[in-house]
Each structure stands twice: as C-alpha cells, then as structure tokens.
Amino acid sequence: MKEDITDLISTSINELKNASQKEDIIAESKIINTIISLCEAYKNII
Image (cartoon, rainbow, N blue to C red):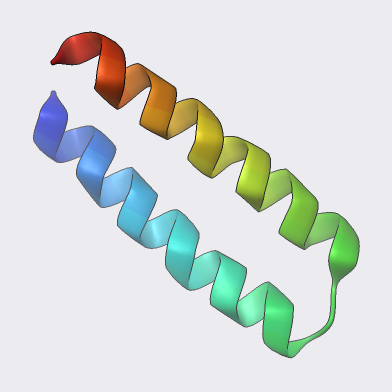
C-alpha cells in the first residue's frame, strides 16, 4: 500500500511540473490538493 501511494505521489509531482510549465493554475491547485491528500493517507498508514 505504501508503494502504491508513493507511486501516486511521484506521478502527481510530475503532473504538477507539467501543469506549472503550462501555467495552468487551476490544474496546479487540484494536483497540490491531491498530493496533500496522498501524503495524509501515507501518514495514516505508518
């Protein structure tokens, strides 16, 4: 489960980089919220 969440966080960070390059602020904020949620889920597993 931890590996799955880690992979999702990594993928989300890459998506955030792409959105940032396109200057898509709405996508950036959604991705940041997703990353925060994934980090909270990871923290709860530990």
